[in-house]
Length: 273
Image 1 (cartoon, rainbow, N blue to C red):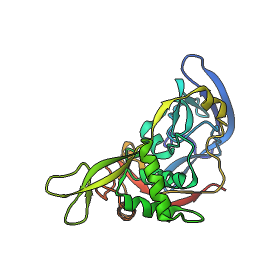
Image 2: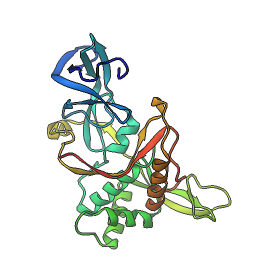
Image 3: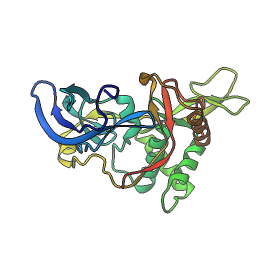
Image 4: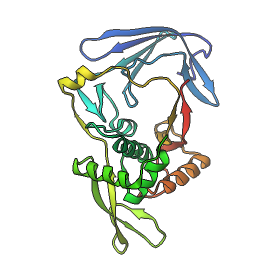
């Protein structure tokens, strides 16, 4: 589309609810296709509140100026990381983007879960595997205001383990201080805390409490994260590889400190206004 469309011609967008009962959700005009730094971007469009990171969008381009974006509803809503999801999604992206608040938690538990979610951004499966000491350090570093005491973080970790939100896994460490999972023969065993966001069917209470607000546009910090680019025929730059290597090692996560194939890395930054 970027090769064939007139870059300064406005586009008319129609947002559709797809599948069996197709209906129009929204219409927007004067959206434009811009090419900046060799990358094509649609500018001037506004996503609906329910469009969460990882939502699958089908795109149709008609008559040069008309663009159709369609969402496919699920057979039934599900709860992914404490958020109601109503449309088809990519599970790998959504596990990285949504935290698993499956129960009411206190402030320290929430800080631990936020740290785990952000560490999951560095893994292509959205999972965090690390020693308890590394999790404590990451939780303290990410606390925006008052930093909790280590004993309180230890207590929060024990409660998360008792509810099954966290589990213990067996890893290992080699002579170069590299953590591996699963454990490798001949290396020193190391217990690792494991976190993976959970998925469950939505219940009536979830739907009643769902504000449908999605993700706002107010200014907020975006943690460093992997971004898939392999399908575009691109590779991560040397700068992105070095940044990922540095951040992954600093976090104390198990596994190689190299970007997974088919991904690039976006460092922490501010988003919104």
